[in-house]
Amino acid sequence: FQTKQIQDLDAQHHLHPFSDHQSLRAGQNVRVIVKGEGPYVIDSEGHRILDGMAGLWTTNIGYGNKELAQAAYDQMVELPFYNTFFKTTHPPVVALSRKLAEIAPAHINQVFFGSSGSESNDTAIRLIRHYWALKGEPKRRIIISRKNAYHGSTIAAGSMGGMSHVHQHSYPVYEGFRHVMDPYWYGDSFPGETPEAFGLRAARAIDEEILRCGPENVAAFAGEPVQGAGGVKIAPSTYWPEVQRIVDKYGILLLADEVITGFGRVGTWFASEFYGIRPNLITFAKAATSGYIPLSGVLVDDKIVEALMSTDDDFNHGYTFSGHPVACAVALKNLEIMERDRLVPKVKETTGPALAKLFARFKDHPLVGEVRTVGMLGAIELVADKKTRKRFDDPGRVGLICRDHFFREGFIMRAVYDTMVCAPPLTWTDAQFEEAGAVIQKALDQTLAD
Ligand code: PLP
Image 1 (tube, rainbow, N blue to C red):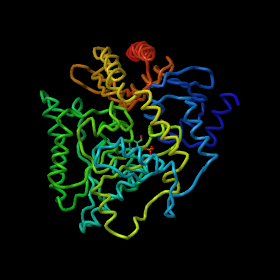
Image 2 (cartoon, protein in one colour):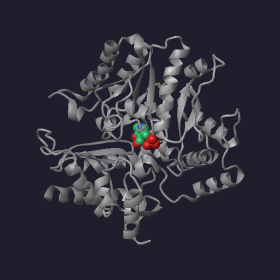
Image 3 (cartoon, rainbow, N blue to C red):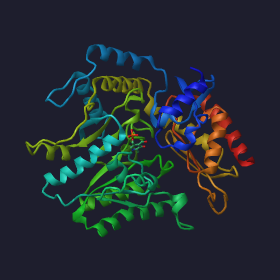
Image 4 (cartoon, helix red, strand yellow):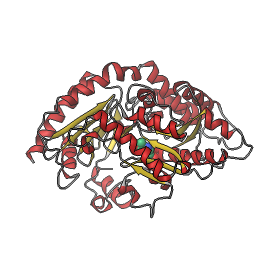
């Protein structure tokens, strides 16, 4: 197949996620990615492109790892599939469950598996409501989350998310979800408000919503430790301790959606540890297998497990691929490689500081309003007026222009409206930071000139 043929067939037969299908119909907009090698992807024209997004916040160990391929092969020939419904289990699911319990916070020892982040959040929503039903408080159904949160695309996870363009296609969103402000200091603080004061105000919006709903109706608060698809919004230091205080005050459950932040992204296995919070549920997906094969899950704390074990009724929920043996074997190998190569501590010691230093170089660029980083997660927010923080009149247009400049120069960053976001593989070395720096400078200058 030539590139053009692939593009034409793609336009004829393939519906892309989160895409404008009219422009895709033209075909020529689509770039054909044919291979991955370490930190690079290679397109059908032979361009080597440095992937600053780890696929989609996913390939933490980089591309082309043969050990993962071997682990998948070995498991496929041994036992390619068996379900975990019929009171049956198998060695890879048990080994991975034990490993996850080991790296999760101490009060979490059990895991329920799925294949996608959306599924894991749907599972968490059902577990939360089931928990309260088992505790004799079935009225507690409301889950409070945040504006601009992304928790997935299934209707329940999409309803828990706070993106209006996702809600738009749910017709309508499910009842029982409320959305409060996200902790976005750069965009939403009052003039002169410190990040610390703003963090407390953003957390207290949860308290106010609980009171509005009636505390006896509220089941849980859900949030991404760092809002990813919403634009890598990093909460001020006061936010999460105050959130924890509020959920404890009302005795509601805390769900940390770590689909992006799980598996070392901010320098600890889970960002809950980094922020010092004690979630009752942690959802994960993406980097559990470095994206080599789909696998997700919900880590469930002892308190919820105790409630589940208090009855002989079934929890009627699960997926054919819950605990898929090949996915579990790949995840185990992925975690083993991350440990062997010290990828998580390196985020604290070297790679995270290198990303912070790299982005800091661009904070004075005339197009840049703010740069934000935590661990190996970062954002460069573009604005029309640096002094007044005025945004562009046509949100997203400049971001797409900038993203295209990045792409042409051989580097991938994602545009969230006019914020350029970055989540590279955790394996980056000095060479990749240098290469990214040169491209970012050039692409920002070109965007400014346009
Ligand atoms: N939660 C978060 C924080 C995410 O970023 C995503 C996807 O990007 C999801 C959930 C949904 O995951 P999936 O696309 O695997 O369903």
